[in-house]
Amino acid sequence: MDGKPVIQIQDLAFSYGGVPLFSGINGCIHRGDYITVVGPNGGGKSTLIKLITGLLTPTGGSITIGENRENRNTPLIGYVPQYVNFDALFPATVEEAVLTGTLTRGWGFYTKQNREAAREALEQVGLDREGARSFSEISGGQRQRTLIARALASRPEILILDEPTASVDTEVQRQLRELLSRLNKSLTIVLVTHDFGFVDRDVNRVFCVNHGLKEHPVEKVNEDIITASYGRPVMAVRHDHELAGHHHTGEKE
Amino acid sequence: MSDFLAALINPAVPFIRYALIAGILASASFGAVGSLVVVKRISYIAGAISHASLAGLGAAVFLNETRGWHLSPLIGAILTALTAAVIIARISQGNRERSDTVIGTIWAVGMGIGLLFIAKTPGYTDPMSYIFGNILLLQKGDLLLISVLDLLVLLSVVFFYRAFHSIAFDEEFARTRGLNTGFYETYLIILTALTVVLMVSTVGIVMVIALLTIPPAMAGIFTRKLWQMMLLSVLIGMVLNSAGLALSYVLNLPTGSTTIVLAGAAYLILKGIFRRT
Image (cartoon, rainbow over the protein chains, first blue to last red):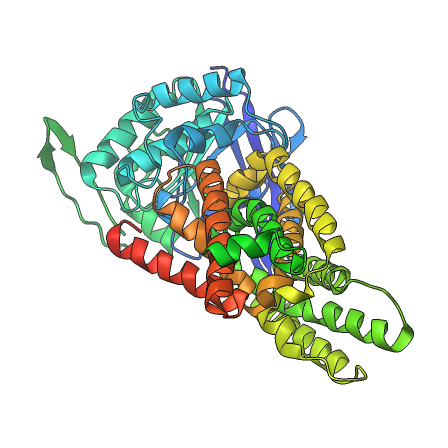
């Protein structure tokens, strides 16, 4: 990938009900990046993601997506929320959930191309045999992968994930890490997480967000930087254990 | 039961026939829109709209008596239900007010206005008929209106099914896909208003919500897709409405109450047998 800027944040400002959360923050995400966004609760991680995806409108500055598009509902972005926020009783199959990712307008019916895109997306996340199952009856990890497939079904260039490892066990976290590393070969990935286990290997930069934004190359992220970005000491819990032949290392806030 | 079948073809009691036709027709919209109301968890909005529709019902009765108008109470109900729907949609999409407080206010104030109109109508008008339903209120002309509204609601649900399914599943994601979710949410609330008034004459403004939510809740036990839930809800609604009417006729009971109690009992029995949901 060519490393051109795909998301440019310039002098971004945002206030909630007159209370400023961000004021004049800057950052740049390049094609092919794998970025993790970390920071304390209430520091603005989710707000930054909502601003990038167009769910919120900045009160100042700008976010440019792609060449020169503003951040309004761009098809370049595939958004993946947390699966735990979904109604466990909602009547939808896995395929139907993924098909909603192909929507570009609300009327009419899904086309053959939509179904083909959904099938390919399910293949990419390894759920191609689960399409007919109910979204409510599959496991948490499978639901999270379904939501990744839904984002992929729109054939985005940038995948933005909000805490995908929350509420899944360590084995599923490992599978998700492998999936995202694989997807990063063709996609730019921005991942919000509390799990410092994600700040490793394939991640190339870390955005520390706490009422501001500081970029760090992943190799320079150390305890001091994390403590500074959280504004208080962070307890690190390291756990190395064997999981089906893989070593897992994690740190938690 | 043979008494009921005989009544259906007896020209002296056409209202039984009208009630059966209205129930079967309305079941289609109730199944389709009711499923959306249930999965989107907005039955309290439907409740507010149905109660507020009493304002229009009462106003129509009042104007007919005092001004010599010939306005079907159903038209009055439709107008106020639509007004309430638009206000509720705007309030629930903005964050300026506590939306549940405003919805509760519309619920109660609409009902209060309706009762005031009925109280000031010359002669005696029993408000119970409008609150708890009375099949005698159903006029032949209402069947045409119900048919037209039914068709409008069903075509809308089919045509915008993808959007409704998508915003009910994940409104935020639908917005990131560029869908005008505000428009579709407003439209869904308007369809809910149109659906609710289809049955206010028969079951009344209080119990109509049960007809909107119980068939989809029953259908949800057996289905895993929204459109399947809608289709099964339609069938369940048709059976419940027809059985409720027949039972009420045979046992000489109020139709609305009989239908709702029957529906509630059927739901509880099903829930007891299939403990999935």
